[in-house]
Length: 465
Ligand code: AMP
Ligand code: ZN
Image (tube, rainbow, N blue to C red; front, side, top):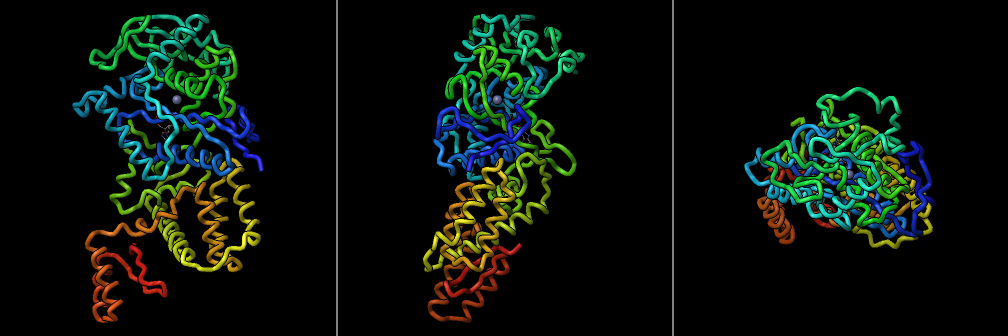
């Protein structure tokens, strides 16, 4: 069953054809490490993780590369504003290097909590300055650049395909100067490849270059590093939809401008997570982190489950109520899974091939995760399947869903030391057939929000809402 993906380049769902049979190269734009990631960013990383898992599920050899932006990304995408790293360094009274180190670590902590598989290659912009300079020199040799006011710019009028990803028309490109546009630019859509005259006196991150001491523009890192690790022509490039008109458009201009050939075959973009009040953004200051959700009593995987309920190309509105609903459904799913796990029956694979086929069809159909989840629930509720069969399918499907069912026991209730002690005591009391003590302990657990159920397999517990 072939994998079908919606390609932003053609605005069509297409059958995925790898450059090299059985292998796929994926580049995903990583975080700018000047702050924590918010759950909107994380929605995009979850979508990319699902994409990768679908390829693994289809037995592809996956090579996944992700960058870490630790220099050059200004607060305005069109080279306006201030370097985000510098902004954070000032805010936190640290060096930009320390800021980058701290938030990179936090990023991987958050993605780890969401069971997102780490990229095979994680590459930092600040460690690839040489590759970026070489790429700018290639562009310079091809006559695609100009220098003005001390900076090196990409001249989009020299690249005929400029704007093809965003379907920009010639009249869009001639449009008048956008707010805050740099007066050195010949065209408002030209963009900086290398800043030599920093507008920020305090900019710490600077390197020698053929054009003077300075630092790279934001887009060049993704072209330079993706081509270094995936080659000049590779399969898939992803990010959030906000990257279509500027960042990815400029990445294409740089890469194809330098090589003179097609760079990426499939472009995939995830829609935004929004709040009822509108957009959430790091710079807007209204962002929610995974830690904040944990502080409110949610598990990180509750959020992952929540995201799976919407197709990645549909906008998703976050509310605490909706997350609460996802949390409850996910808890029920885990409870059923534990029930099936105890089954001593034998699985008859012939009985559930239909479900395997349907699941594969759903995930291969442009990552239709709502459909995949619906199939999972059909399995759970199917009275013709025994526990062993259900367990087998749940674990298999979880290779794509990434809900970490196999290891989820501890997470059903993140037990406090006090609750753990009470549960252990109750276990002992039950073994000693001390029903009075056992009931007392059950009541004490109830007071701290833990409901204990006695089942033929022993006591089970769930957190009360
Ligand atoms: P940034 O660190 O700003 O470059 O963003 C990291 C990733 O998150 C990029 O792929 C963005 O497109 C994506 N992104 C930013 N805001 C949101 C949002 N509200 N919902 C989903 N993805 C987002
Ligand atoms: Zn990028």
